[in-house]
Amino acid sequence: MRETPTQLGFLMPAEWEAHEAVWLAWPHDQTTFPNRLSKVEKVYCQIIKTLGDQTGSERVHLLVLPTIKSKVEEILKRSGVDLKQITFYPTDYADVWTRDYGPIFLINRKESTLGWVKARHNAYGKKENAFYAPLLKDDEVFNRIKTEGQKFNLDIVLEGGSIEVNGAGVLVTTEQCLLNPNRNPHLDRGEIENHLKNYFGLNKISRIVWLKRGLTNDHTDGHIDDLVKFVSPNKILCCYEDEEEDENYEILKTNFEILVKESFEVIKLPMPHMNYDDNTKAPASYANFYIGNKVVLVPTYNDPNDEKALKIIEDCFPDRKVVGIDCRDLIYGGGAIHCITQQQPAV
Image 1 (cartoon, rainbow, N blue to C red):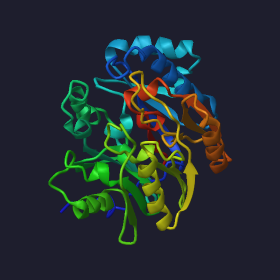
Image 2 (image 1 turned 60 degrees about the horizontal axis):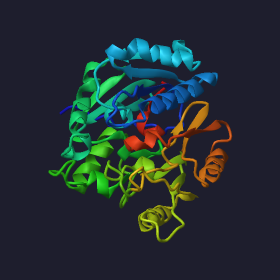
Image 3 (image 1 turned 180 degrees about the vertical axis):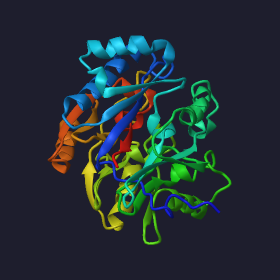
Image 4 (image 1 turned 135 degrees about the vertical axis):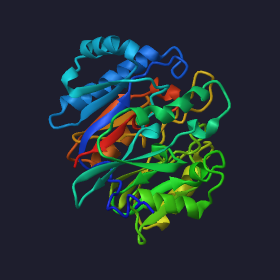
C-alpha cells in the first residue's frame, strides 16, 4: 500500500509561511463577470503589480489562454507590471478559481521538499446550469501543467477554498461543504476526516474543527475562506455580523461560538454589506484575503466597514503591508482575492 503524504512527512503549511510563487488564472469569461470583464482585468493588474512592487515578494505563475497571451502581456505592461516577475502558462481553462481546482501545496520540513495534492473537482457539486457545466474541465488543468514537487492524487472531491490550516495540526472546514451529498455522497464524516489527516499532515493529536454553514448565496456551499482565517497558530479571525436581522447573523454567530469553545484566540472580523444588481445579497467577505510574503491583499467593497477590517488585519500583520483591493466587480464571479490565488510554499 502506497504511503500517504502525512506518512511521508508532508504537511500543508500556514499561508503566512514563505512562498516561492502564487498561482493565478487570467480572467476571460464574460459569463463569470457579465459586463465587468475589463474591470476585473484591472483588479488582476493591481494584484500582480502590488505583489511585484514589494522586494522579496513571490513570483506569479499565470495561466492564460494561448489565444490571448499577447493581449494579456500588453494589458499588464500598460499597468506598469514587470513581466519578468511572471511565468506564463498558456493552457485551456474555464475559470479563474485556482484556489479550488489548483494544486494544494505541501512541504516536508525535514527534507525541504515540495509536494502537492491533486483532488477531484466537480464544479461545486455539479450544479445543473449553463454557468457551472463548463467548469468541469478545470479538473484536468493541473494534470497537463508541469508543477514542481511530488504529486499526490486524492480521490475525493475537494476544493482548496474549503479548508483552512494553521500549519500546526489544526484544519477548519464546514459541514455544509465537505459533508454535502453533492461532493462525496459515498463518504461519511469519519472517512472524510481520514482523507484530510492522511493528505494534509494531520496526525493523531491534530484537530479538525467543523463549522456549520457558510455565507448566504455562496455558490460553493460554504467555503471556509469566506468565514475564518488563521493569522497565527492559535489566533483566528472570524467573520461576525452585528445586525441581527441580517441573513448571515445566526450563521456567523454559531461559527464564532464553535471556535471559542476550541480555545483559540478568536477575533471578530466585521462584514461588508453588498448586493448584486438584482438586489440579491453578495457573498462578500473580508476574510477572503491573501497573505503574501511582504503584503496582505484584502478585498474591500466601498463599505463603511472597509477601514475597520483593514485595521484589524493590519494589527495581525505588523511586518507586512496591508493593501485594500476594491473587489466589487470581482465578487460578481462569486469570490474575491483568496479564491483566485493559490500559494506555492518555498522550501
